[in-house]
Image (tube, rainbow, N blue to C red; front, side, top):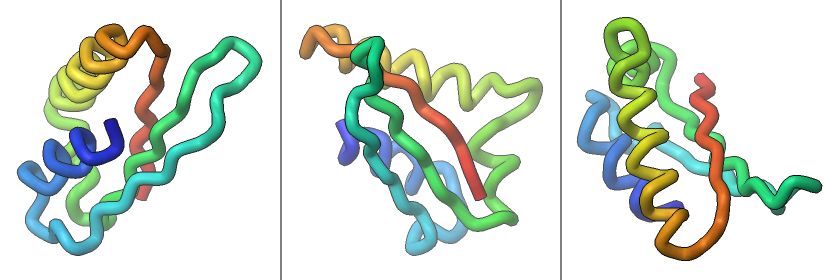
Length: 78
């Protein structure tokens, strides 16, 4: 799952070497939070107009997680 998020994000940004993903332990609801860190200049590229790219990334991650029967959330940070 982490590798999937890294591949997607690195394909979108101009500075792929600055892309980093941190994975948190499941919370009380069983949701695993993936925090995506990109360079400040690339945040707009990952979020997209009206958040469309961010929504698409979250949808792909949720679909991949459902195959493994787990719940995930993706947060985008600088």
